[in-house]
Image 1 (spheres, rainbow, N blue to C red):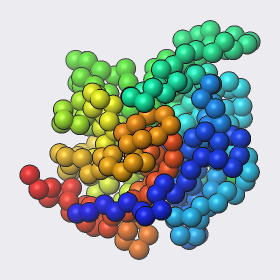
Image 2 (image 1 turned 60 degrees about the vertical axis):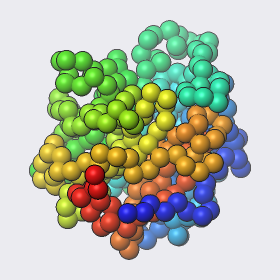
Image 3 (image 1 turned 180 degrees about the vertical axis):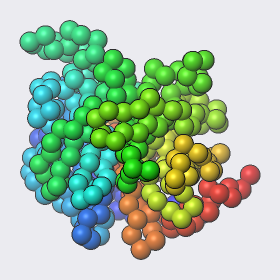
Image 4 (image 1 turned 135 degrees about the horizontal axis):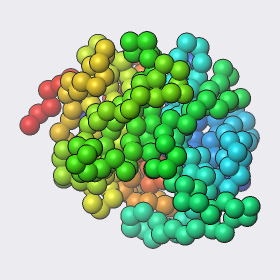
Length: 338
């Protein structure tokens, strides 16, 4: 199996507007009425690193142009004037677009060092912002839309007193319920059955009231998952199960990509999972960037003509594209060479 990086990578880069002049990365992508739509995470500054979400469109999934010259979702719109909205994932269920996103009520200052996660500091904000511990934690939430431009808040999908990212909806209801992947960082230890941050799953009938999450998958390969794992892209239905790409992080903060197949009717059941990563930083744009080196972080995938398009952030700096025949990837997961 070969995953092919696009020759035009990175396909989306910073610039053009003030609110995206520093970084663009970790996009949500969906195909609707034959057109590709991308929702990018952007920043116009790292001090503070206040993130926004912008909307782009494309006929071929490679060359994207902006639908609007201003963000479609901002922290201010969500009631957090000093916050940061991050890492969108998108699905469409019963004619409605649902967007998962992570939100930090107060944006931090980032100081890249060229090695690992940037150094950080806490800005002084007015009106009491930043005075509570929860203002610096990252919650996850959902907004909805019928046109990809105007968004309405639906719910917080995680407790507000913990860090909980990588919340990802399945693209259809399962047994009459919405299904959601989560990655609560504090759910670690004997009581939770995992020694590091892991993937969990939960359900809801109304997107507002969520069941207690269940542990779905935890780090198993210390060579590339020693620090944590988390869901990356919205599940893709295949005849063999739900395909989910996930990320693994090692002790050197290198981000790699694995894949997992979940049962179609009971996604708590893992059918198969790659032991080895299917992607790791290889190219210059995956190894060197403005924020964090050695990061590939898929957050969007779509299928067209049997080909899986994988959209991923690189070094928290730009957006890249890779493709692989969907059936070949599924076969690889089921029969990975040892």
